[in-house]
Image 1 (cartoon, rainbow, N blue to C red):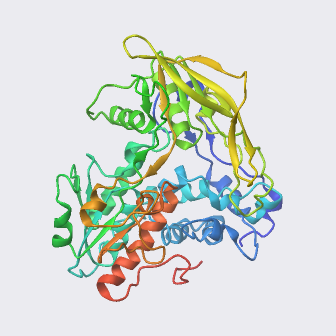
Image 2: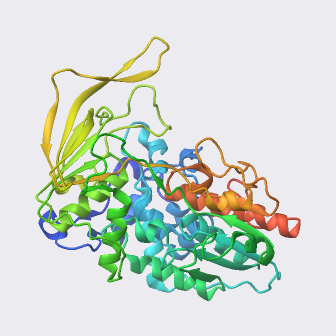
Image 3: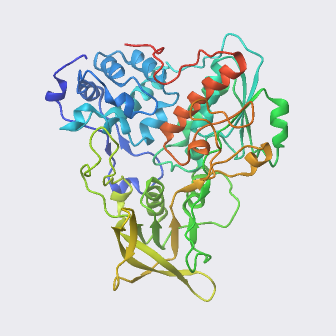
Length: 488
C-alpha cells in the first residue's frame, strides 16, 4: 500500500450534509464532498492487511485495496479503470450501497473502517468530470440478439456486459424511462436522475437499444421473445409489495410506499403520472417499516410538508455496536440512522399496528398499536408477544407501508413456462442463472428476491457471462473472483 501507517495517522472522514433546514426545501442531493487532499488521506487508511476481507464483503468483488492505493498515489484514472473492471455503475453504488465492504474491512475490527463507499463515489465522479468514461462499442458484432427484460441495475449491467461481448442487446422497460427502482423508487435527494441519464447516454452510444413503455407479456407477447431473440435474460425485479392485512387496510390514506415514492419521483421530474395524487402536505404521516424504503418515505414526506412524521418498526431496537453472535467480518444488524431519520422523524421500535380507523367517508384518521416483545418458544424460534396494557391510538391521515417485497410478478414466467420458487421468485440456477427453459435466464431481485443494488449489478454481470457462453460456447466476460481482472 502507498502509506502503510496511514490507518494510524488519519481518522475516518466522510462527506457531510447540508443543514436540515436547507436541504428539506428541495429534492436535490445535499452532500458536501471532501477535498481531494482529504480523500488522499482517507485512501491512505487502507491497511496492508494481507487478506483483504473487503473483497468478500463486496458482492462485486471490487479491487478495493488496489483503487485505494491508486487514489493515494494520485493515479485517479487508474483507480477508475480498476473500479470499472468489476462495477459497471460505481456512481450508483457510491451513493446508495450500505457498504458491506466497510463492515468487512480489517481495520474495522478495532477502529473505524476505511470510507470505501465515499472513495468509490469520488473516483466515479472524477472520471466523469475528466472525460475518462467514454462509450466503448465492441469492435465486432456476433450477430446474436439478446432481450433483457427490465432496466434496473441488474438489467443495465447485464446489457452492458453482453454488448461488450459483441451481441445485439435490446432492453425492454414497461415504464416511460429506463432505470427501474433507481429512477422510480430512489428519491432524487439520494440519486438525482441526471446521474442515471449520464450513464444511459453512454450505454446507448455503445449500441444498446432501449424499448420503453413496452410491457412484455402485455404489450409485447412473451412468445415473441423466444422467436425474435437468441437468448432472453429476465431482470424485472421483485415488485410485489407486502401488504398489512388488518382491519381498515382499505381506507383512503393507507398507501404502499412504492406508490408514494414513484409518484413523487414523477412529480420531481416534471412527468405526468396516472392515478390520484398522494401528498403528505399538512398531514400526520406514519411510516410502517424501518428499512431503506421507510427512510426514503420519511425524507420525501418531510419535503412535501408533512405536519409530522412517525416511523414504526416491529423489531426490537438494534444495538449501536455489533450484536453478540454477529462478529466481524459478517454483516451486523445494528442501529442505522439515515439522513432522513435526522430530519425530524419520531422512531418507535417493538410496536405493532393492529388496525386503521377511518371516518364515515372512508378516509384514514387514526391507527391503533400495541407494544410487542420477541420471545423464544420451546423449539428456539422467536415469536411475537403483545404486551397487555400498551395499546395506543395515533392520529394520522397518511400511512405509508414500507414492509418490503414478497417476490416477483408471475405473469411473464407463466407465459414462458418458467418455474418459480416458494417465494415467488423465478427459479434459476445459482451457478449459471439458467431457468428451466433453454435460452432463458434470470438475474437480480427477480431471481434472488429483494436485495441490494450492488447484488443486482453483480448478478447482472454474472448472468451475462453465462448467456454469452450459451451463445458462443465460451465467454471472456469476467466472473467475480476469476482472477482475470487488471491489478494495480
